[in-house]
Each structure stands twice: as C-alpha cells, then as structure tokens.
Length: 461
Image 1 (tube, rainbow, N blue to C red):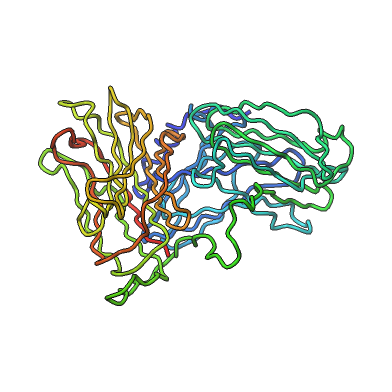
Image 2 (cartoon, one colour):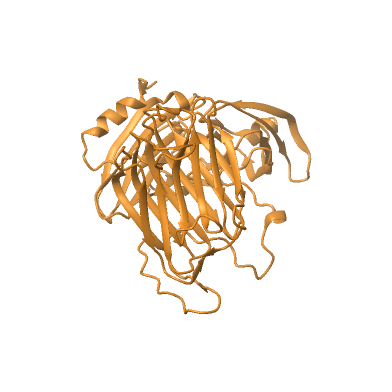
C-alpha cells in the first residue's frame, strides 16, 4: 500500500514552480488490475502562450476524497503550445487532475506491447459537466464474461456527500441476473467492480449484459471490457435515451472550443444577427483582480463581434475567498456578472452572488429578454469558507435551453445549480462587460481581500 499523504503536500511541492496554475479539476478513473496487462497514458495539450503545470492526486478506490488524502502525482510542466504524453499512475483509483483551464487532457488505457490493440482505448475524463443527474436512470451495455474476457463496472460520485445507488444486471433477453443491489458511494470517490457479468451469471460465460443504475446524487458510470489473451481493452460509456435526442435535421450538439480562434467579423447591420462560425475567446491569466477599499469593483469591458448569434457562453475562473464583509457579514457579495450594452434589465446573462453567515446561499440570476425589473433566478444553500480557493464554471447553453453554474473547491462540488434560459445569445452592438465584486450600496457589499485569477470567457458557435 502506498504511504498516504495529504493534498497539501502536492500543493506545497508545486509552489516552487512560478508558472503553476491550480485551476480546473477533472477526474480520470484508474482501472489497471493486477495481471490484466493495461497501463494508463495521459496526453496534456497546452493551449496557452506560457508554460503551464498540472498536478494530480491519486484517490484510493472507495475512499472519501473530500479528505484529500492520497499519493501525489506530478507536478508536470507542459510548454506553451505543446502536447506532453506521460504514463499515469498504476493500479485502481481516481486520479484528480488540476491545472489551467487552457490545458486539455485526454487519457488512454494501453495494452501490453505486442498485443493486437497496443494503443488501447480512450478512457472517459469526467468533470461536473458530464455527470448524470441524480434521480435519472441510465445503463451500461454490451458487457461480457468468458475465460478470456472480463467485464468490469465503475461508479463515480464527485459530490461532497454520500450517494445511494440501485443497480441491477440483465441478460439480452431481459432476464434479470441476480438481485437488485443497493450501493452506498462515499463522497468524491470511485468504486470499481471487476467481472460483474460473470459474478451475476454464476461465473458462466455470458455476453451482451447491461447494468441499469440510478443514484440520488449526480454520478458517472462506465463499463470496461478486457480481453486477457488477445490483449484487448474497451470502455462502455452510459447509454443515450432517444427521448432526449434531436429529430432528424436538427442542428446537433454544441461543438467544442476552437483551439486557436480567428477573429469573427461583425455581422451585417440591420435585420437579425448572423450565426457565428468561430469561437470568440477572452482570457486574463494569473491574478487579475483583488478588491480593495479604494477599488471595490472591476468592470471588465469585452468587445465581442457585433450582431452575431452564438450557441453557448462559457466562463471559468478561480477565486480565493477573502472573508465576509465585517460590517455586514450576511451582505450580498457579487462573485461575477455578464451583461451586454452595460445594462442589467433585459441584458444580463449571469449575475452570481453569495451570502455568508445567517444566509449561506449562492444565487444566479438572468434577465435576457425579460421586462424591466423582472429576473429569473435560482439559489442553493452553500457555505463558502474564508481562505478557500474555488473554481467557478458557468455555461449559458442556448441549444440545450439551460444555464448551469458550478463552484468546486477542496476536491468536491460546493454548488451545482441550473435553470431554463430566457433568451438567445445575441451580441447586439458587441459591447459586453463582466463585473467582479461591488461597492457598498444597500445590502450589496465589497469582497475585500478576495482574489480573482485565470479568467476564461468564450462565446461558442
């Protein structure tokens, strides 16, 4: 067994590297069982203009990851514009991966050299955006078990509390294999179940088994098939429901961000907006704002292509909590906001706030295309702590018809809320702005001592 260390060890080890950016968090399941001939490989691409560093923490299978105890992995530097390929940690567990939002990570599970599938298979990379909502059932299909093949099953909880799941296995003819199992999954943890189809079928050969599962908190699930003799490995991701699918002729899903977007020209004046074809990106690396008594508010003007329509707004940044305003500890702290034309009414795509002791709530509001004085908002109970560093991620998805706000820190998700949007993403005159913190007025208070860093703002076509 590895000697456990706290996550603080990894952070302290990284502090000596001046270019390190502890930021976005993703998780990669480690599934290399003894004797199966597999090994994890990571590929990290740096889309920034400076060297970036990623650091990792190996969370032991089944452990409470919110304790942030485990074996450090890294830090490892990736040069500007370069891709670095490294071998990941061995064994079974959950690799917590932290780095700049301009780092992009993919993973493969390789088979032994000389096998027919030496490059292996792509491993799912998991974050708060691809979790399955709590209460929604899904399934992993095409699992099998035979003398040469094993079908394994993985279950991940990225939340800060335990989740209760129910799972059952079914043969291809619909016959249930064994009982329905109740599973209790620890906070921020990964449970791995080897050779599930074989166990359900009494160790008899079986194929095309599906595992149906639902959990009371957001979760992720996958299957893994390993061919021991031929050196084969494959991953089975959760199934898709046709109930939520697009009809034929629909535009499909939102594309990912362009790694090097070119400037989008303004659309023609007059008439409706022109659909954008390129990603618009605005970044501010490192610490870019620390509210003070003399400068409590930052208004960041962003000139976007005028008269264009986009499919998604994506925002990500890091904020270090500097404490609640001492003269009004339950006052409203603006975390950030996004608006066009410098207007709140009818033009706000995000207005995220937090309140401290006595309230302990995080709320997001929008006003797009609503009448003056009307807002659409949603809040949730959340206790944010002085001295803690949080990653804020926000998506306003015009195709899916929802916005989603997540705030994570200490290896777990503190806030995860979403609601239907009220209007499309039209840039109008192209004069947009983001605001951070507030001056003192009414019950709004300045976020003195807070620190903002590593801002990424994107408009995606």
